[in-house]
Image: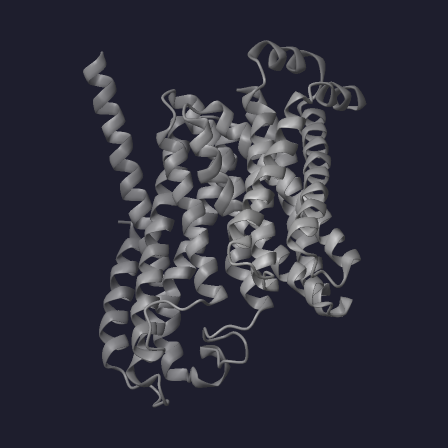
Amino acid sequence: MQKDFRLEWRQRAALNGMLLYVGSTVFVCYLSFSLRGGQLPAPAWNALFWIVLLFSAVNAVAKGFLQESRGRMLYYYTVVRPQAVILAKISYNALLLLGLALVAFSLYALVLGNPVQNVGLFVGNVLLGAVGFASTLTLVSGIAAKATNSSTLMAVLGFPLMVPMLLLLIKVSKNALDGLEFEASQSSLLTLVALNMIVGAVSYLLFPFLWRS
Amino acid sequence: MKKNWWKALAVVLLLYVAVAGLLMPVPRLAILNESIRNLYFHVPMWFGMTFILVASVYYSVRYLRTPTPELDILAHESAKTGILMGVVGLATGSIWARYTWGAWWTNDPKLNGAAIAMLIYGAYLVLRSSFTDEQQRARISAIYNIFAFATAMPLFYILPRLTDSLHPGAGGNPAFAKYDLDSNMRLVFYPAVIGWTLLAFWLAQVASRLSLLKQKVYEKQLA
């Protein structure tokens, strides 16, 4: 699994592209809001942040399986167990998304102002979000890679599946923005962890079947 | 007849629900008035949908263990029936909301959750239509079906409970079961749940038989 993870890391050509993608998206947001010449209200800041993350997550993770060549897939198939592949992909994607999210957050805070009052909670929330997005989208990209019109399918399958997670994430990060105490978001965070575990476990169980075909 | 007793039961129960549900006395409550009778039609839809989707997941799991075209068809038709029940549930709820809340749709966690869950299952249909190879389609849609079930059920049963909601049974609003479901209403409500669930299974069975037959005819034409 360690080796698989390193293989994944080695072909990080897409990484710079993703960083640029996030950077330019944030900048577009900044430019379009600077026309009004005012500070963004907190709910809009929050919503925009998660939309940027959502789209960059879909784009980043979609590369995972879609750009994999057939020969390499066959090679993995003979060398490692499918469970190792899915775990490596999920953890790689989680790290990738976390990195992207932190970059996005710092850029975003730089140009649009930082209304977050409870940074610890906010970052923890982003961490949970990265893990959740990664485990949902990795399986979805595996599914979409098998189909004919995979890039549309990725969005169609991925967005509704991520909505339950996204609702909780937006709620918790709104709490973090307003600087509410930890107790206010405790139950949402727990549900988020449970949801992540459900999705992760289901991906772990289902991936061997997907892999075989 | 021995095998089909449950279909007769479904017909009898639904006839009873239609007659008794519309004519039996109901408690007089402010705002709700006669619209409380929607309990016999709206709520059982979601019960039926949940049961038929559980059946669909069961067939999908069985398909992954032993791949046969029959199991794939059963899973697909069950999921389609579940979607139909969900859409009817949304429609009955929407009509009810128009007369009690004054709007067809409100920004309510329970409503949005149900709508998104329907989108998740809509994606299942899109996914099925984007494969040409039948075995691959069957296998991958079985995988997605299980995954979709795992993410859609929290939308129905967990997330709306975390927030306030206008919907009866949440956010301090009276649930039907709490005090205004008197024993008269139970006499109709429980048969309604059983009847609509049986109807859902019947629909799925008929649809699966139809598509199996279509497949057989198609194979005969090829031969």
